[in-house]
Image (cartoon, rainbow, N blue to C red; front, side, top):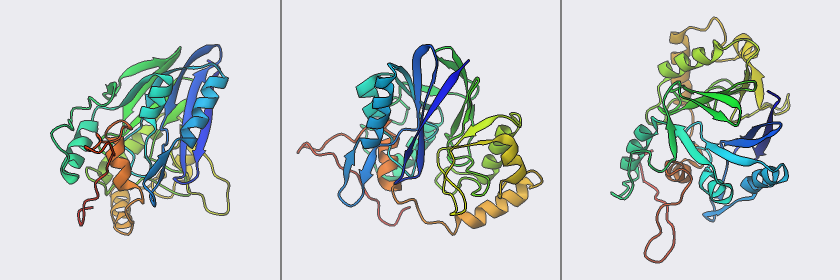
Amino acid sequence: MNAQVETFFHKQTATFSYVVHQAGNDSCAIIDSVLDYDPKSGRTSTSCADQIIAYISRNRLRVQWVLETHAHADHLSAAAYLKAQLGGRTAIGAQIVQVQSVFKDIFNLGPEFTTDASQFDQVFEDGHTFSIGDLAVKALHVPGHTPADMAYCIDGVGVFIGDTLFMPDVGTARCDFPGGDPHALYDSIQRILSLGDDTLLYLCHDYPPESRARQCCVSVKEQRDGNIHVRDGISADDFVAMRTARDKTLDMPALIIPSIQINIRAGRYPEPDSNGTHYLKTPLNVL
């Protein structure tokens, strides 16, 4: 299909964003975009998202989808900004309603915040098929890191797996956020690793040791042979014990409080107060 993947890296959050399209077809999808955020000042900016806009404009592409693999806890989504600038439909897994419900309680959001996923243009159930131009896509529900994680299997390209797996020498996603489940993550990873040895897996993050360069893509075979947490031969019980113990040692992500409040709104700010200013909440002694 002569599909093309353009990768954008956000250094502050070690996040990969992607634009996927097909030569000869102007339709494209943006996957896991990033809105810049300065936690010291509370200011947002769009420098990373503007690089995506410049690429799309330069290549005369038309945005069909702005896809999220899940409601990220480590970076703010630029989905709303990109949709406003370029069009397209925002989409996420249907189980986002569970995540919205949990965090509505945690942040004590008012009745104006609905937990029905209506902030997004489209939600996908497991197995839902759609297209990016002529590229066939299948949405795979891969819970564990959060209840709503989706992977996007794009014909002729590979699978965009969000935070389920990292590079083999880094391991797997944490499961200690509300609704996380290491048993579910193990099953989800096995599903991904059953897709065929040559299948390419596009990651959302990489945190490389000094001994290697940063990578955004790895094959199923490389994961099965060498992932330090879940390679072939590691049982579900062993994985769950490892993941549970490891998660107890991890700090909360630096941007979890602002990012979740934005991302469960499909990248939108909360409604402004009477003075016209947008505010985020910080719950004390909760997370």
